[in-house]
View 1: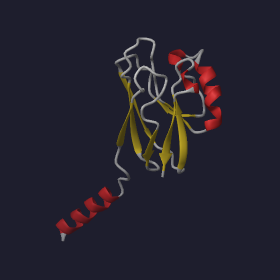
View 2 (view 1 turned 135 degrees about the vertical axis):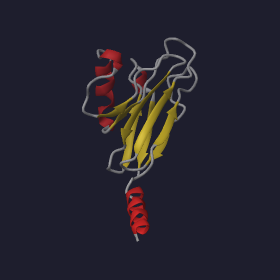
View 3 (view 1 turned 90 degrees about the vertical axis):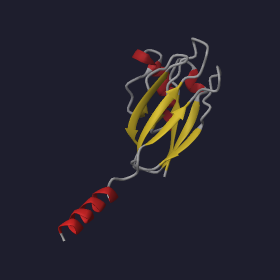
Length: 140
């Protein structure tokens, strides 16, 4: 009986653990101001690890991944990034962001996906990149 109780408690705890962490690696499209990965899907409340693998070979092609909760804030966030340390503003629309990665570098961030299903845009906030470097995180 004791072993059955331990088994049931363990099974219950494992069943409540929620979705497992997922790792998403995002790269630029060569030396262009474009993401190679323009869309990925995660589950609501899932732990997500984003890796910015900057495969660019030109020194000035620095990139990050900044996920926003409001697509209408792209320009605002992009403009504020110009005068922000690390080109990453402190803005309420930012859900998560990798640090800036230089050419040939990798940076990462781990966060919990939003609980509300939907589309969440991501951009690069290096000066001028946000206008062209966009993608979607789909939460279901």
